Length: 590
Ligand code: F6R
Figure 1 (cartoon, rainbow, N blue to C red):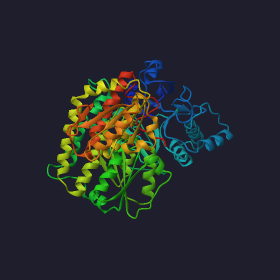
Figure 2: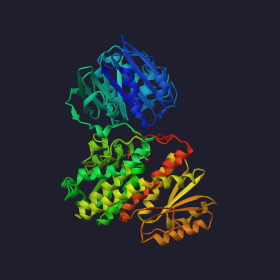
Figure 3: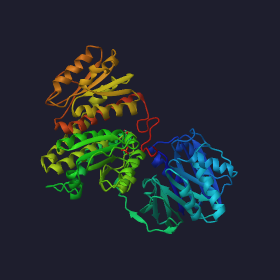
């Protein structure tokens, strides 16, 4: 969702701010803006639309000493030029960009209005700008003003703040991500490391409820009125590479990185003879009476496999959608362990769950792709996925990495070495799908006109079907659902019309015959059936097969098929594959 870029120093601010926003635009946004300070004066440009539109309206300025920029994903107030960030206070003493949501903004606005403040936008952010100005004029000290505002605002915020009469760039942070980057030509700040990668070699994670300021050569970090020490982090280039190479889309590149990502997981967590997970993590899983997974979207679908893996270990286990659990937490298990799965590590609903878990003193393991993210930092134990930056909004390689990580943890808990052999076979099976992607492209061409589509499977395939349907709907805009094969007759079969595409996933010999029967029932009611089986279960009438792997890993191979299918349907329809409408990569508001 929203992205922040800012900095103070001696750099080409125009290209840093606009280039930086471009690296963040994969998160999803509807308007963009920037402000820079030059010759002691603040200049402001903002517009609804794309960063390219902002580029067009921004003059070719040089010699700025600081700047802030933002991509906005509307929450309070429609996408418009006025509601775009940066926002400024009534007397233009404060300019700021903000990620997050001010929950008590109505009450604060009413109070500010009573004190004579007028508002020009519908945003919650303008409240912070006016509050900061009011406190700054009263207290005559930017740190004291920020400290006071932090106590007044309920909700989440990461803000980059320019006071029009001060040479430093200020910030404050709660719950929303913010990193400070230290470079040789200046100091910088951004929602993640990527925009700063070319300018900085060292980063500071900004603590919760802390604030501070940067100049070209200095930085100050504060909390509760006291200076605090920085928590330095290193970001590896591979975690931040923002380049699609020769690929037409990030999504295609990321699907095809699948095998490499799984190999990298093995490199990081297996030394050739045994798994190298922190023994405390394995102990924690073994000792738990109930393993509770929490996640959203694709990560939630990955967690459903985790539940099955825990059942294999003989454990009680269930998974909850984080946005539900956050409001209806359930702590009935005697000795629970929570496993939080999140590609970004910044999903607001999951952060809310983690806060509740931590407030109750319970252990939680974060499985995330983002080192230093909020969920990573606040977990009892964190496991990195090492999948590399995922830019396309639709999650692909991160799903493969999440399920593989869960399979590896399960193998480590049961001390079975054949787990690794199975994962190596998984890599080969994914490579085989990649080599035969043109066949999937041909299948996709038959589905471009569909209004609805259904994925069906049994066992692990029913879990793969959930993720395949999500992929298809989010990037091709075809209404897609998934069902466990046996459920069709209990209602959904009423939806089948002549020509409705139904994709049957058949990977497990236990249920293959039953699923094929279900598909025949649908065919006789007019559905166009596409059967995606495996090498050993292949029937010559099937439309595609994937190489044999253990059924518990077959879901990953079938999902790679689903990723390609969705990609090609979207390609044929000429849709914006990497940035589908209404979606954001990182869902940082609840
Ligand atoms: C779908 C997709 C989303 C995310 C969900 C959770 O392709 O990407 O459903 O999986 O928003 O995001 P993370 O994993 O970052 O918590």
